[in-house]
Every structure is written in structure tokens, then in C-alpha cells.
Amino acid sequence: LSQTKIISSEDVIYTHKAAQRHFHLRATYSSVRISPPLSFRDAVIQRRRWIWGHIRIIRQKMLPLSSRIRLTSYYISGLAGFSLATLGIPLTFFGIIRYDGLTAVLIHTSLLLWWGIRGFSVYKVRGLKHGFIAALCSHITVTLNFIVMIIALLKGSPKKFEVIRKPIESI
Image 1 (cartoon, rainbow, N blue to C red):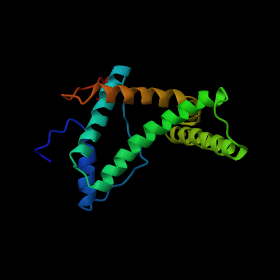
Image 2: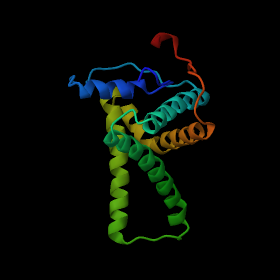
Image 3: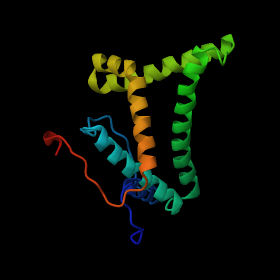
Image 4: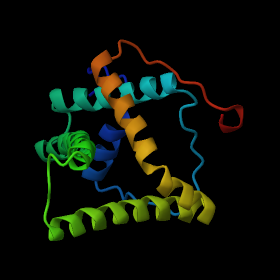
């Protein structure tokens, strides 16, 4: 590991190594202050580090095969799932594809569950108003994240570690 140049995603490697050595990894419900990227440009820089760090981990076989398959499947299912679901909206609207009653119920139920999970997750941390807004803005935020990921992939692997701006109070 020390001979491999890692620009990002070292947290994935070290967490996996800690788990292999039987360290106890736990989640917490305590508040954790994080600060997201402050601009679209910073989001692309950050996501580019993450994505290409994960690609490097997968290509250089730094994790066991099962972990590499899981990591790859997360990216593929997220990108493909969003692409297909988004393509389905105009195809359904223009009557190009049709589905029966049961399929419609399942699709609408899954959409309601998605909104509910996103809203509830934010509600637990920020309260009812923010949870409701998060659910309503889900399509916008997920679409922007998808665009950022595609740009990060197309820009290619970063050659250096670029630092993004953070608000003063989070430093």
C-alpha cells in the first residue's frame, strides 16, 4: 500500500484493513458537522477525487474481490438506475412505453418510499421543515449529483490533490 500513489479514497482502504484486523467499527447517531462543497466546481473536484480514487482501488486490486465487486456495483447501479429512471419519464409521458396496473403501483410506491426515506433521513438531523424540503428537492439534488459524477468521470483521473474551499466555521 505504501508504494501505491493514492490521491484519494484512502479512507476506504484503511477502514477495510481495520475491519480485517477485527477492529470494531460503529455508526453513531451523534451529530457530525460536515461541510459540503460550496460551488459546482468544488463538487466536481471532490467527486473526481472520490470516483477516481475508487477506480484506482478497483484496478490495482487493493481490496479483496468481493469488496471490489460491491464498490463497482454501487457505481454501476447508481448511474444506470438513475439514467434508466430518468429516461423513463419522457418515454412514459409521450406514450412510448406503457405498463400495466401492478407495475404502475410498484413504480409509484417505490417513488413514494424514496421520497419518504430521503425526507426522513434529513428530518432526523435537521427537523420536519428541512425533511419536507429535502423530499421535494430530491430530483434536483440527485440530478445535480449525477451531472457532477459524469463530469468527474469525463475529466479523468486527477494528477494532484486539489483542495476545495470550506466555510471558515468548519475549519
